[in-house]
Image (cartoon, rainbow, N blue to C red; front, side):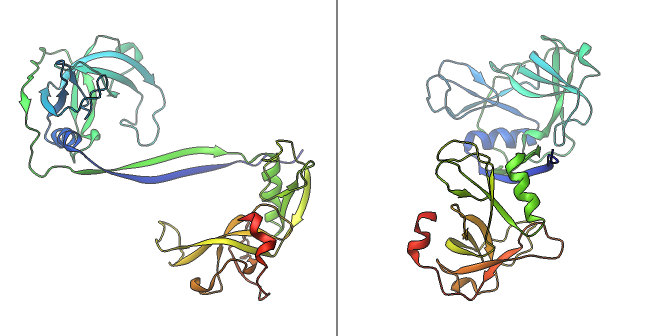
Length: 315
């Protein structure tokens, strides 16, 4: 049985968003060690605040200050904290209803163990030493056995010096990817500078990269077919924004390429030609680097352009 391939894969990008007046006031307030909620038309106080009543959809902007102490309404123990979580030692995820609020806030509770956590326990905010106007300005919650704080309930105008108007939240997904039988064969062939697809036993189309099943007929595929190495540019785009950690100067061209013998176009970068001379129908071939496991880019072969009728179904 061939080796099952697997490899760690990370998808990561910064998510940038602007803040409306409610969220701006809430996050700026955290920077100033003030917790704000928003009051609905029927008198409920929602923390964290939202801009629209989740029941009536009415726009709400009446901000009120609540206490930094509260009560745990439910919880779950986290035995193995992951990268980027609030604490690097085991902790509890808790919903805390702050004094003066009618809803719960999800955050971390620093506790010595699960036996020290229970529904109904009293907690308070532990503020971060350095605050910037983010939910992480609350470092976590901690057990609290002092006198109950009086909820202020005071109306707040939401104004602070140097208001936070936008945030950048890093989004990251770490997982282990296993390509399966069909794509494992495809990847292994690439390491030999060959491109292999699979033919559908029903419609006879050759799919590259192979998927293990025909997306049109829904039947399993197993017959391997070597395609290329040459191919035809079916369509393309000019990239003008330099990607982080990608050592390619802009502008450059990324194209869909129908390899000879394939019935599905794959994508690749076009090199060896000025970006403004790339065109549909351009005949190209792969360029491999020493030790590379896949083509670094595709370059023109010097052949005449392919006739549109030969690749129009592969756009």
